[in-house]
Amino acid sequence: MTSPDTLVGTPRQLGDFSEWGTELLVPFEVRELKFASVLWLNERWFKTQNKIHLNGEQRATIEKWILDEFAYCVPEDSYINIFGNKSKVVFADRYGSSGLGPHGGSGRAAVFGSFHVKGVGPTPLVASSTDWWHSHGGMWLEEAIREGIYSEIVEEEFPYGASSVIAIIDIGVRCLLPNGKLGKRKALLVRELEVRPAHMERACVFKVDEVPPTRLKDVERVRQAVNRYSHLFGSIDGLTDMFHRFGQQAGYGQVHRLFHGGYFTSNISVLGRLLDFGGFRSVGNWYRARSMDHIPGFGEERAILQIAARSIAFYFRKYLQNGVSPSASVLDNAVHNGIESAFAEECLKIWGGEFSRSSYNEIVVHVMKRFFERQQRTYVSYQLGNLPADRWVHGELRDYLLTNERETLVTPEIRETVDIVEAHSLTPGETLVRLLCALRILMTRELLFREDLQSSIYEAIGAEDGEEPPQADVVASTIESMVARSRRDWDLGVGRLGIIAQTMAGGLAILLSFDEINIKLVMHVRSDFEANKSSESRLRFGEWSTIPVNEENSGYLEYFSNCKTALWYLDSDTLVSVSRRFNVEATNLPLVLRALERYTNSRDYRGKAVAGTANIPAN
Image (cartoon, rainbow, N blue to C red; front, side):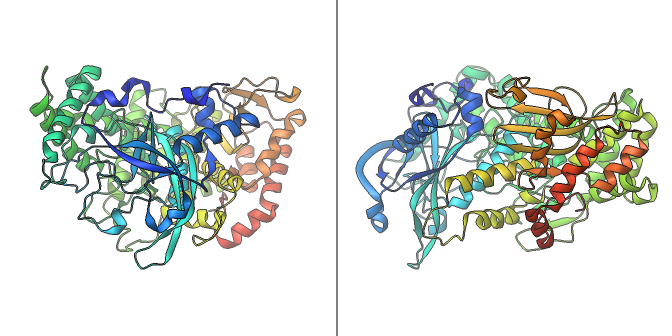
């Protein structure tokens, strides 16, 4: 096994984090936590990044390393009994903002080697004028779990992914509120360490009255970071590419209705990866939704990135020693082009990808863009509770697949696009798969609605005022379940996928799909562990394999009967309907229908359906 001490949490393109400037890091002391415990390890990260399989002795070794290296917090008199005698010096990373943020950088996170640990307590970079809620430096356990769920989905689906959470640690205590009452359980979140555009911006109002003035160090920090970035990536080409990536991330999120909460320079990396998911949420449609009324919302991402473009262009123009810096308009154009290109690509992906003639592609993108702009005229305020009843198009598309009646398509843009699909697909199989792609991608991710996800997490781990931490297996199964049932965008590198069901469990990912050529059901299986059973010998570690749906492989179908990790896009009536309409090979259909019947008859499924929280095709 790879020694844990060799693990690196900073993307290699960025080099050593300390090389970004001598004034970047501010040291402070933390002390060990006596009662800390590991609640979750990101098995995907350890497998894909380091070929480490977390089982048995290896898991115990990694958990010990996590606690030995990262289970530290700023000592507080209120919790003095939870601290041991061992201490270490860690670092808060200085960064600024495109505006006048009060903090001088990371206010509750610390650099531990090549990793970033969030929730360590107040760092020296917290503004003294900030209220307790924005300066206590802690992280709630629910918040850490939510960030783990969101970051896993973004890492797998967005063009440039996310900064991965590698572990969640319970620190063994609940938060003590200013009124003396106990609040929520506290946690530490261990994640990859990223360089942010904000590292190249001034923190102009942080401790301006300090003697000697902090602003002199702040100037030098920005100067060094700007020139380090230019050295690694180039000033014009590098920054243009960086802002194009920001635009692509935003455009992808718009189509898939995944809102980061605001593309600020402090919550996205210079590589385009998203981080800090406190404001992240899935939205139910394309309405112009705002989490905070004074901050541009969903669909308005370019407005925030325009501010970032002006700020970064200013600091490069001021502090770049060699080379030419791009103008703000060049960077803004890069954002615009990134949003437009990603939006067009993802709109085509909704309907199964490009058509045989480019003119059809242009029409589909134009129609979907028109629909997006029409929906954006409706304003939604999460802050004010101004939430009109969600109306989305998934239901009418589902009804159309069931009935084959065009009148069910009440949204003009959806009706137009379905007409294009049916008129210009080359085969019946292509038509079926394109419609199933739309059904899947347009299905609302209700489990990722922010407030609903918070409630689901507390339902799983227990009340927020619990005296004991939840079991680690409960946390792991909660994250696995939420990710498994919330994925929508799968890239297998094999063209269109007519997925009707999906599941992820125990290192296996299985997609039940229609084969476009032969119009029959197949399974796509990926195993993240070495095959050790004869039935799994055909699977290649970490790669997708296509296997037939038959009695020999019926064991894989059993995974689709578990409503905690499986998601079906069709109910039995619709599956039978499309099978008849498109002349699907019916030999393996009974096997699939039996799996779907077991899924819908499960006790857990029925209970969730009654409560209105089940992921079922009828919703």
